Image 1 (cartoon, helix red, strand yellow):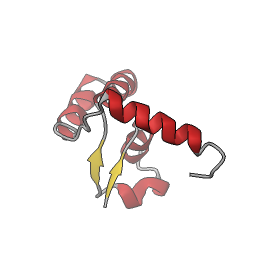
Image 2: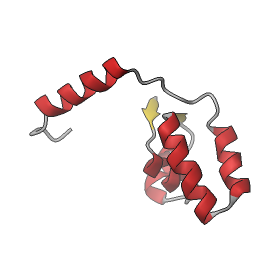
Image 3: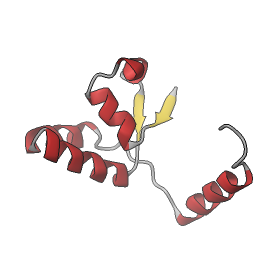
Image 4: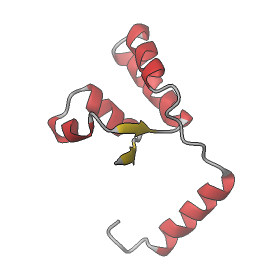
Length: 85
């Protein structure tokens, strides 16, 4: 199964959080914005070498998000705000 990994999820996998262990072998799909957040976090906390290693790991794993996709997602979120999604 393919999941979208936000920055927090990737960081927890890197930190080997046992709650994220089951996702460690899954295909990572993320966005360039998440890469930027992750790179900044790793640069600050683990150094440039680790940040660059993860940049290479995530190369090609980026979801292209269009303006239309964002608008549809926000409309869906608004319409379903009272549901536990």
